[in-house]
Image (tube, rainbow, N blue to C red; front, side):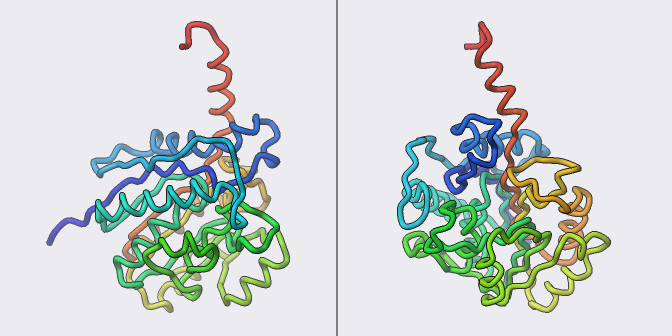
Length: 290
């Protein structure tokens, strides 16, 4: 049998986040573009790999413009097309994505859905459900629209570029504890999307495995937003909502799934390396550094 091709995708997209007000201890541009450093830092910290590693080219233009209800719409659309073209040319069987904000899962997950003829389920490990729509007019960050984009809902310009859609019945939220707005709770019910709280997966992964079994799929893609983690243990992301999952619980959940199903894609997203950013800014101000 031919060996399955796996690629590592460094996808430092930052434009989907509109988060400067949430990180007042960082200068606005550093907060906005902290995802860039975060993606590269994840790759630096990750084990060395013999798999092909590709970096998606990302604009660093800070002239942020809202269009179609999405901040930085044009660079996001351009980068979506570029990422998809790169992945299609490489034609991998499996994709590890290191982001970047949450929307970095949209292209690899929809690519893999097409590749496996929709025989695929999504485990979205996150404190938030990311089912905002551009027309909500309440938040214009595309990273909060990542799951709706995967389902083929949202901006037509972006959705039309994606190779496939994944239906709500094949998406499970894990670690969900912050809906942010009542309309998001209602929308989740309207879409009939299931979720499990941190408490429901703290002891074992049985409810997740049962849900996957009921979908009948053979392949799974997993999105790991680091704001799902308990802030009293670690604060690696923007979000600091209490009562999250422990690091070992997330590791156990992902590995338990991998023992039973083919993991076609794994994304680690939303790193916001506050300390590294502050150290970088300190070093910039010292002599003999340039």
